[in-house]
Length: 554
Image: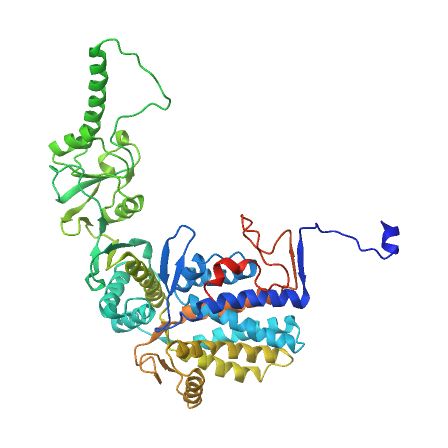
């Protein structure tokens, strides 16, 4: 080995199939992948953002402008791109909204960082500058944010409307925003320390097609979208004892296949009688419990249905597991896994009524903490997109109630932060100053894209916004509907401060993570999907394995 090294021959330590990208090529590769992800969702930003149609390998179609949904549905197998997708997922988990903003800022940070790298500024200096800028930005957000009264219903409705706008809910946003505020209030509890805690686990969302979104409703309690198992059963029960069952009311079958030889017709009748007796005993046990309603997750035998109907008991089979778990809280019951061991203490108490038009059961309990938001839409695609928008709005209203801080929307906060960061950059020494200024420039991407998506001139809009902020109007933002620069807080365009803080944090950390990489070593092609498609990108090809899913999006 030493002899070979002396002769100047290289030592091979990697397999023939492995790939390696180093230094500037690695940085270019990573930045290109991250920017491609950001570019794919930028056109969806804002109230006038466009939608994407996503078709998966099974032919299922999703139409949405929700950032995290788009990125999760896209067929991406590039490792760097997946790091940027994690930004959207983190933003969704922590703040509920602002996923597109976070990803777009991350992409712009990397674009500006690439310009600095070309000026021979080391990535370490850029990373440090971005970190300093992000810390300062979070402090400035807290300074700019307005502390509000979380009992202010008009403000909470404005937060909900701002989040929903552009997500298929504009025509009915007043009605839906009121439902959202009422739903959040219904699941809000006050701690001993006087803080508001919103527990959205006690909020259930059900969807229905064939009706207008304006007919959506909020119900105290739960919904079961099933029919009674027998026509002779009652369709409602007031002040009812309710049994939630995760055990079939059917004949118990043997664990192994068995064969029985029957030599006499009486023997066959004995088998049938024994099965009938088993079913009768199960129903009698339910009767002994004084249960008036049975919601069963498993099946109910036809004969058992007959016996239950004779006893006047309302029974539903094949109820969803999630419905039973939610009804536990609504009627204060336990889900019984073994019918024979059930006791009266396992039963819940409440009212069960039937909506014949919608073919739904409404289940309400005394002082039920759980509520159900019934969303209606004309088609499956419409109601699916509406549900995504409602979920985001619920999260941001819940954040506002818990956090109590809001910001003016329409790009107002980004322009103000950019202005303050440029002032802050003057106090920063070294090459980090340029990185702080690049961070400020990156934040202004948001108002630029808002203007572009609204069909306005982005440069003129940004000039007008900067001028308004230089004159001291901290809440000056773009009203995408009118095209005017105005006080967006007064116009009812408001966002939770926590979501903006999280977007800045996620974007800067993801950008720094990508910039810190100067060497990519892969055992095979540079993709995370090692399926049948071996067309992953080679080094120098830019996007690596993002071709299939990303190509149609760009």
